[in-house]
Image (cartoon, rainbow, N blue to C red; front, side, top):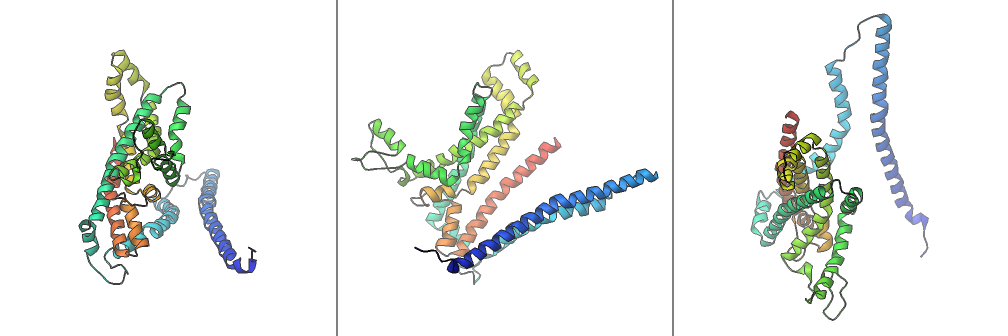
Length: 349
């Protein structure tokens, strides 16, 4: 097969335009973040030097000017948020009240569909199972790892190995675990680790990802395996931040390790625990890659994000897909509000 540059020229031109646009945007942002602040700094320093040389009182910063400068630096972020988040959110909300072709208004029919179709109810139940199990179990494992590994001899190596799954993408982790759950017939040698263990113990191999609701729990294991390292790192840092005098005083009082954990460690790392649980809850609500890669949402394993993709892009049901997206957004909002209030209370306290 010969390569014809003339036929592929439009693609190269499109690639070149994309690279030029990327360099222009990145260069513009770097210019704003580097050159402009430096210019304001030099200008103020010059005014201070001139005032000091003349013996005049030093100029005070005007609050109005500071607000203008702050707004100037916030404009790029506000612009990107508006284009990438606010406008799509408004458009998706409007589409959720329209039919599949986005041509006629149907009111709340798409939202009624969410709770009337059996398979959609199954999707919502699966999402609820995910959001209940993943944050709690992953945080629990992360806390156990953090306590056991803290001040151990090979702490750095152990933490690196536990955190390693975080470096793997959700798709890559799902493919790895699909091999763990792989199935072959009874008369064939098993290549899946789980089935090989079952066969070694005298059992029969199973098609694990086809049996509901067990398959959903097995997919949840993948998410826990990935996120436990994140929880361990955050909680380990919180444990190390506990003042040493509190720990020494507790030991002098003769508290047991169990009492030390519940009366000293847990109250001290409560803010970090809340951050981990909230972060994992939001990530779990949006889970898509694991389900898409492992089962494609089949066999009663689909979740909200996966079904949203199916409805909008596979089945052409824009209204129903948008309704799922809005519903997912509504579920995330209370968690975000709780986290903001919690951070505000910590700052004030």
